Length: 63
View 1 (cartoon, rainbow, N blue to C red):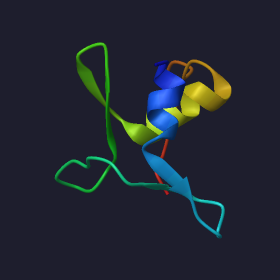
View 2 (spheres, one colour):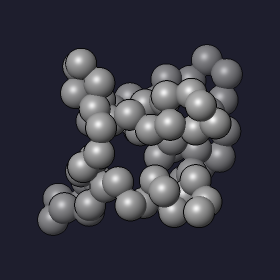
View 3 (cartoon, rainbow, N blue to C red):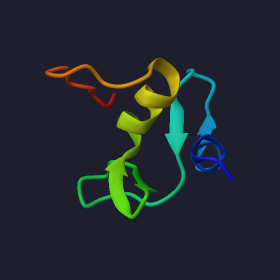
């Protein structure tokens, strides 16, 4: 299973257009997603899958 397929199985699109994370979350309620043995925040993975690598110095904010 690809990273994209695994990721897409862990959220649902709600009527507002938001992607609601339905898998594990950290202590401050951010979505968690494991890639190659490392846990990453789901909103950052969403950015990478949609737009490509996060540019140096750019902040990807969770809404």
